[in-house]
Image (cartoon, rainbow, N blue to C red; front, side):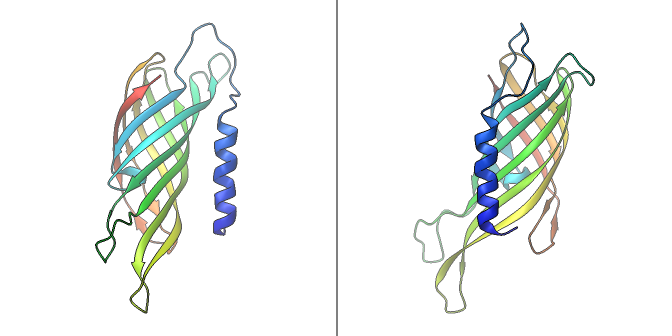
Length: 175
């Protein structure tokens, strides 16, 4: 997938996530989550927003949710000339969450990395790569407002077919 198609896919997913496909229920449940993730798909640390876009409560399988996640992270804030020029890492994923309070979570997505590097002529240039990420783990999340906790395995497959194992630990708030 070329960069332009990847960017349009992200814009499409962001636009679609605002529309919910879930059934109406008399009990309000949380749909928005904000959390900090150490390690995981965003690298060493990321700030993430997740929106539950589908929630199945009454049909089989019950207690199934699907969420769309968008995060932001950085690694180096300064480039090789010691100027402010941060590397930007954006994890994007779709997660399936199954359970009532203690959940099993699986997901997949892309980690977009925009980093500075030195060119052959020793000039600073930016390089953008799309890397696949997968998520498998545990999530503690109540159906009402409150603290959420995630522990997962998040391997990242780089565009040059390098496999990186990451374990993510997240804490945040659902509302």
